[in-house]
Length: 94
Image (tube, rainbow, N blue to C red; front, side, top):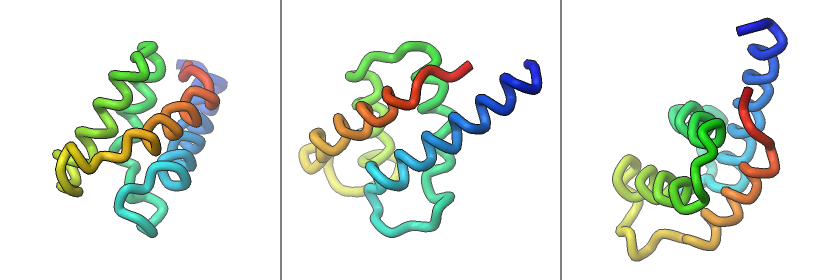
């Protein structure tokens, strides 16, 4: 991977972090690095052109199963759709 690609990937990961912290934040008011464990997966899904439904399923899994934040029936689908839209606006990873 070239230096330019590494810089582009670093910038993309930073933008994904911003979206997860600003638009998703299912825990609420967490430290800036709280969702960093999800950045790589989200970046890979965007790179691999995952569907909105696949991204939605991942965010739901992360909230309900991984973080244990309530039941699937309480998942805020509208918020997740806004998050996906913001992620799509970032662009595709190198």
